[in-house]
Length: 116
Image (cartoon, rainbow, N blue to C red; front, side, top):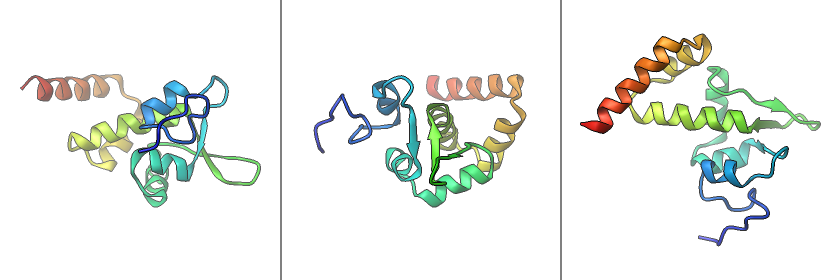
């Protein structure tokens, strides 16, 4: 693995959280291929998450998909839910509804699994 360059986090961050922490303020957007690399996903998978409204890309001046740091954070959350066994449809419903009670329930279930 290449040594990480702290001045240019887009080059070789270890993971999405590192990218978020090292990116300079105001420069926190990422293209679809870099986002896919950060999460070890394909661009097609990201498009599927986008279609299900779990994350949302914006288009740059060249019409390329770009993701804000908030979308990176949402994808970290969605991937954690997938690891807990939630389907994309369940994650999508939660994301679209923004139901606080459902969020609390999900977090409590995750905490119970960790404690077990």
